[in-house]
Length: 84
Length: 555
Image (cartoon, rainbow over all chains, first blue to last red; front, top):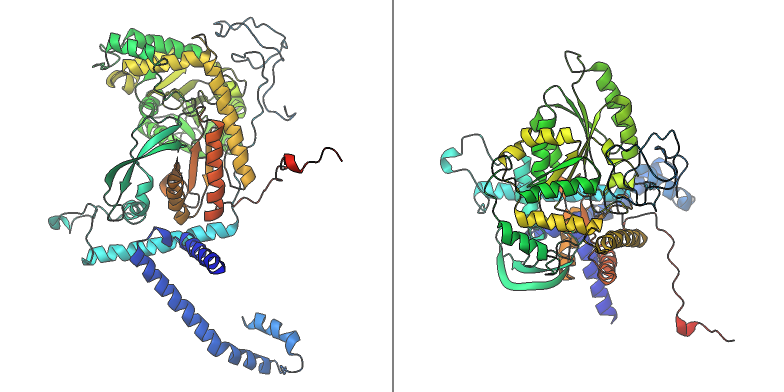
């Protein structure tokens, strides 16, 4: 039953995504194109953030001459906010 | 219920009970009244005060809704450009009209935004409009099922009909779109006497006695001196406004006026200035400016200043601010043209329109216009007012001179509908319908607001627009409602602002409480499924009735 509920939920979420982005009105092959493009972009963003964000964070902390060991959990949030 | 800051002056409390007809002289009025009455009453029937005009609600949706709407439109427009590119390159067949090969170098015919929109946005969801109906448009009707094999470019009928679809889109406010044989006896008799075709214009040989009877009846119904009826509601506006105003006149028209009014104003050749919807400050500013500066270059006074408003605006469901406009009109000596297409028969305690709703004398409005299409279940329109005005229109209006007169069965249908509403035919059916409509619309609107939908308009209007905003949800909503056997009208971009797509419900007196409940329940489920309940003003839930079995009376 849980699997069925999950599937129904995922189906409803996909339907919401179709409605909100306006893709609902397009033909199926256009929907596939858009989904592919979106998925590619999201995958690229995730890959880039996985590869580069820790390095940038470490560099930023070193620039502020703060060692992440001592004051890490106080300043980490601020730094992330400032560096964007 | 009367607020103290009302703009118009209230007359005394008791009005003339006995006679329904407006006296010519208006000198004697029964009942108590103050000596210095500024405002005469209309045909009061004695038991209502001039109603306070409730506030129009135009709730704004949260910001993310507007952002998502624009994003949705943006994505679909991008895909539209992509498909146009494919069609231009030749990878895809163009189903729409195209220029011929020899004309490819001429000025392009189909490149403007309107055609782009039609090709790429409208065609995709086109199956929600122009649905063929195969029964009369009463409270329930039958829709013919149609499918499309090539994404709405062509349709074919499967031959099956979807029966008993609840009709929430027809302008059948008082339920006169019926085929009950008893009610239609007089119509059949008149058809037998006059036939169906008129074969002439009013001015030539098409002026039947039944037309004169209709006009007298309409004048009596509205409480004015005289009226004239035309064959088509749209043509009533577009063909008569040019006869009333001309080149050095000024027309002040509301932002959201109907196309027929705009077309009539443009055809007349007068200068048109637009004031913000129902905004009296904007109107006053325009009036002041017009009177002070006069015509654009010569600064001569305007020959006529005509204020054009509608009784109920059909896309918003908002009511006109009649007392304020009348005060402005008197102060600045302008004329008023009131288009009561949706409000005649549907608003007011006895169905006589916004003039009765506000307790205003209909003789104060210079030109009363209305249509018979909505509440009377027929076709055509009328213009009513002073006798001189109507006599002038009889000879100078394009519609009167060139258009064929109304067909006799239609005229008789209007006559019987008016007689029913007035109660002249001896039954209380008309008044029952007017009251039922008022009840239905209050119930429907308040339930929708409770559920959390954003609904525009005044609480006294039978038109209930429910906002959907996002372009994807518009198509989904209409199709899902048809699947649940409810027929609704959804309206999108050119007719409404681009961010405010809506579904427009027209409540009818013929709807029973069960039908409305079924519609409301479907709307509730669908609203949750599609997520269109954007309202942030949730009223408190009504208390659940106690379940009998849980209630212990004896301890």
